Image 1 (cartoon, rainbow, N blue to C red):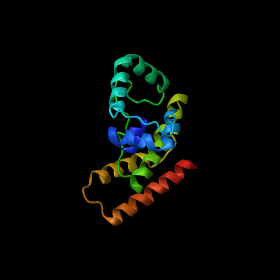
Image 2: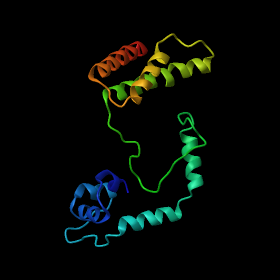
Image 3: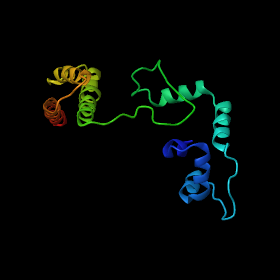
Image 4: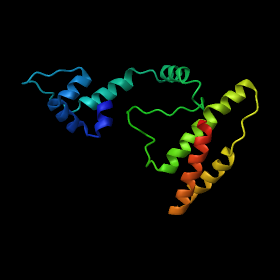
Length: 163
């Protein structure tokens, strides 16, 4: 299932690749002899059906929640699928990457510690930059000058957060 999502191939093409590529053999721990081939092109879908019939979703959800308890914001919401693929893939721009870094630095790290230790948050322009980023991200057309301005202000905020 991981190779299928990684390669983006159909079931039939995945089996063809599995018959010819030794790296796929090593990944699956299935070493084929020179004259041996997998002829069943329904093997991936059969595997998916088998996994879905034996898996206990409630136990899996409980185990995942127990393991990720500190980092999951909404513990009452868990979205799952029987296939394995990247579901949150988007085009990474400089502004998005810088904002995610600032969000992690200011929301996840020091502010969480301040809440746990019950001390006052350090002063920063994070809330103001958050508002500006939201208005920027909602715009349809983002001009070059505005993008450059967002980049520089987020870099400034990030450098202050890392100090």
